[in-house]
Length: 163
Image 1 (spheres, helix red, strand yellow):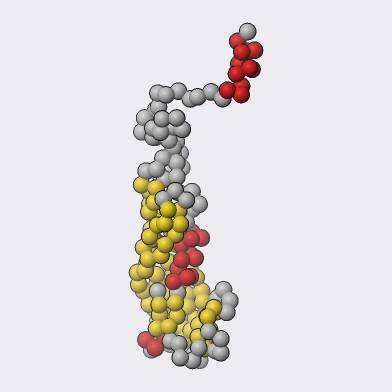
Image 2: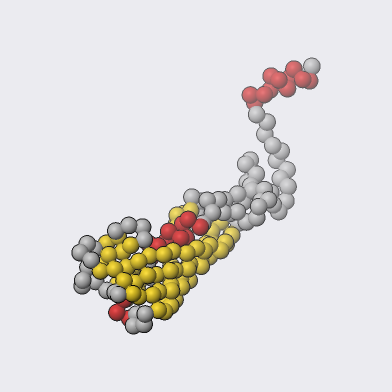
């Protein structure tokens, strides 16, 4: 979301919009995440203070059973934009604009909120049983009949137990 400071005519206000950011999922690859961003701003002596709220829906696949899954992700960010000599990001929460610049890019902050809020492991439900490692059957829908393979390293102990 890029905000043009020339369009913020009042000392306080709100800007809302929909943006898309991309996150990397280890199972599904790169995911496009639609986000709704609401930014409250206030202006004091040429310095802009932004408080943003991000609401996003991450849609991917369950990391256990590979079924489609969607989860809500949200969070907030605060940033200050001011004019100065240096252009670019000065710190985590300060953006310094050159005299000829009028736009503040909030996309990196939206991306950070989504990445931090996205679970490391997406699951369709907490008790997801996943896939059978032998035949690949979804254990949530039906039991698998292939039988669990034994670990051959324990065969000697099994023979002792049966004697």
